[in-house]
Image: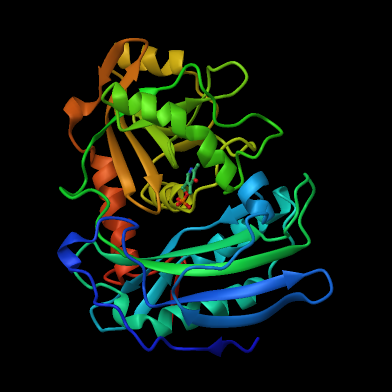
Length: 353
Ligand SMILES: *Cc1c(COP(=O)(O)O)cnc(C)c1O
């Protein structure tokens, strides 16, 4: 694949590295490639970052045929740039594409696109502790057409955003509301796909949880509202009697790459990790009997978020005195050290540019 590169003539002033936040700033360039039935994916190009011209009738605006990914690039102390588990993200993008009838993309081409774009905007990769360059690949349906059917034209794009540590104060135990009315996903639905519509459907529960003083919701299964699934846009883990539990990948939860990395690391350290359906009642019982030792969520954005409070039916369960748990801290330190290149990559998770 030959990528045509058009560089900006007006580079932007880079933001202050100590105040990046998450998803606020975008680099100077973006990658675009188009799809049509006749040509397949064509015209891969890097152009200055800026607004798109699109027909208001573009199908993505009306029927949300869209998928996305999220991963990060890191600048090592020796100046080299590396990506964390990029191939797993690209595989997952194609799994999401398949679910919402978007044509498959070549994973080698997507990797080449990410590498080339990150190189072009290399100066944007922050180096301060806890910072990285967030990479957002996505696909949108572009047919100018009203009516529900899969589109026949698409754009695959990649944008980049320098980001800071997700939580300013470092690892910060969060307050989570156990959602007992709204649901995120059902068997046979799109829960396992990273597709925009899932997130639109989750907003109301999040807003209501925020009003009650919680930062995110813990989703229960969509049929019985009984089995624990995941937390907001991250996967959930619970340590009970020394054993770590997380929901199995059965179609309604997202197969998180941080989830998988955490499971592999914990098993490597000798922890027993069990992927099984657990009810909220079982969790409450463990809490009441003082057997719930730790809870945390995993995701690319924050890596590890310790759960300090779980609100369920007007009652707050305070977990581990709202302090960072031992496993949470150990996972955060181990994963970020691999990502930053300060520890050995024994699982083969790193791609150096
Ligand atoms: C992205 C996402 C996750 C976390 O996946 P990572 O690959 O670890 O970033 C978990 N749940 C949902 C719903 C997500 O969208």
